[in-house]
Image (cartoon, rainbow over all chains, first blue to last red; front, side, top):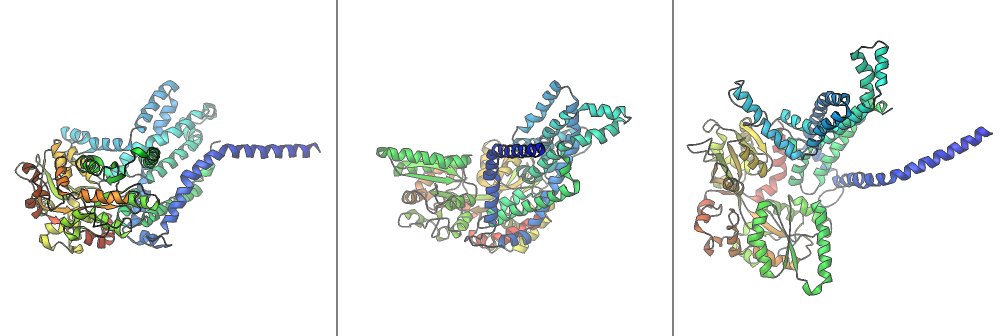
Length: 291
Length: 346
């Protein structure tokens, strides 16, 4: 009897709780709806219209058959993946170091990461021209040290593009990862050590798994943000790296109407959704949620 | 942000104008590619015209015809007069983004050759020429003088930049391959692509915009670059140790038109006519070194002789160049771009 009454009270409480949460989430949902869902639907709609405004799948036929569009999508995914991997390899140890520092020192170091993050992408990209250029610092040093006779061609290729993009992206990993690492209870590490685990085993079997929520959040942020890069591949790729944003710009200038350009956007969205869905399944990222 | 604020600001201004009928005078919104070019054009042309016609001038800038398309599709365009490259005008006219031109008002258009105007667009204010430029520091004893020299990295060793687009580049390739200036059109696409494909290994960097080309020049990344004449003249004026030639330049017309559904169509039509006035176009040369398009402009006697000889439309210079055929590009733009993209990914 009392159990039933308790259950009923609990159920009512739970309902109220859900309603409250929904109420609190409404403004955010409205913003997402207006800023994300509606534009995506609008792009989808434009992608199936011809110049006269009639329904057509012709834009997708262009996407599939013309102008190396598919190879651009492959390049986009490849470069984004490469940037993500390199950013993790560089960013994880860096953030780990920051997380071990005393908070006051870590805050100063964090500023060192945040300050460039707030500089415009254009400025940071052109800064790499100063470093990697024919008369840049790197080439001047190499020639001065006698390592090479003539300046090397360090720019205008995929490597330079990836370097430039990694520079922009590392803070996107560092921020969520740092928050997760700071929250890790060091008692776990001491417990592991007291049970006989060495430093390496403690790191890989205790610390690393606990840092995964921040790592996966940062990884996804980097990958998805990289997909839309335009300035860095244009300036540092020198025509040898064409990502989807550049191809969409070309499509807008080449074809009548927005059909082909929007079809390219939808194509990338679909490719990304499939890839991320696959990654979630294989890597079981759903298990990496914060405890 | 600017894009979204402008209509709002325009609406507020319109309200203010309606609220004070005594002060109301017709307005016209004129749109060009922006930057230092439009600032010069505004001083030389737009502001004097607005004063002459007694209208309030508003300005905005555009990047591609997609901006005009958005204006028209919005159903309530705020733009009246747009200035573009002639190829863009042909494309926009085909899409139905322009009002028909009333040639009984735009009488100055009769000065121009008929191939530069259509039912929905008229010639613009200036020519822009795709010219060969080189570093004077790299080539102390004279630089490359023709497209053949540009493609010849043995005769003129040095880092090349190239325009990552088929327009201009195919013409340059054919001229380099020995095609006569009057035989460039219709473009032999296979021949032009073969020339560029063989040249790809010699290109240090492909630029996407002419602004980027100027950045490469100023950064010292390249030694030989084809770029629009106004850009290199401006860079040299600002201290770049570079030179250029009009020889075999590929010269492209500009055009002007009125946006479909423009709010001030009648005023815009008069404005369009004034933009083709030879005396007003001559005034442009006091502000920017692009050659005016009006065939009567050099007969006005208003252009300083030392300036005139530097302009791309000065008869002696004009003769050295090839006029880009916008109609060929209108018919071939899509398949050629597609083929270009495929080549660049080989």
